[in-house]
Length: 335
Image 1 (cartoon, rainbow, N blue to C red):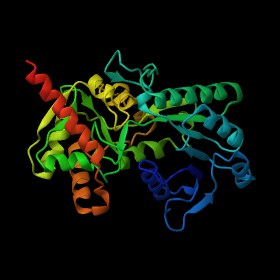
Image 2: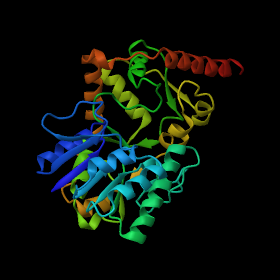
Image 3: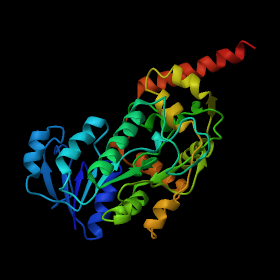
């Protein structure tokens, strides 16, 4: 069975590619060649956004599965429909669980939860792309499967709710320095973190699965933790106390000048989510997540501490945090 991964070297896709190979898939990567690929793996070096060049590179080729990790807009999937209609048995589009209704009318999320996100253009683009693909499935039998990951990480840095452009290291630095750390809301909303190695089990189980055609799936762990628990676990792994500063999410979104927070918070992380994974489990009976959130967070903290290249400072984010801290202190002083 042959699979083409468009991208294939990112946070989520690298684990999927590795597991697909382990399970006997003949994997080819199509990308621009800017990142290292596993030794010996077939690659097609072309920019998928150059449709003419991509069509030439793919001429005469057929894949049982095409997994698209780099499509974000209607134009992207319209191009892919032209490139792959009749040339693949299954086209898997990576959407996003952030596409689900925000704010949610029910904390329990199933694949039939409405898709609507007024806060984040990224999510609205994914929704529009899904609609185009499903229309093509109805009109021309385009063999689409939609996968909606939620917060998926690969263990090289612990996920946090609020960070700057350079990732989560500066949050760890604030904990190590005994500085206040910003947690949105009161920190009690529930969140789900899925390790990429667990996500891969569900994804590879859908590859080549005829029952997955014309269906959407989210693939997450069944576990959830509050943001307070997540940050406390990170602080515990650092061996330091957590000095939490709870700040209203809409206040952070209005003043998130160092990082776009409206979509990331109001359109995603500020909302309690509990995912019902029964649909993917019906098709992939061996889909069981084995990396607990606490263990994954601790491992990610230890990775950052032991890898200097992962310790990227973010002065702008640190100063922004200090301004938020002072703003909260000023509000307290006003009373």
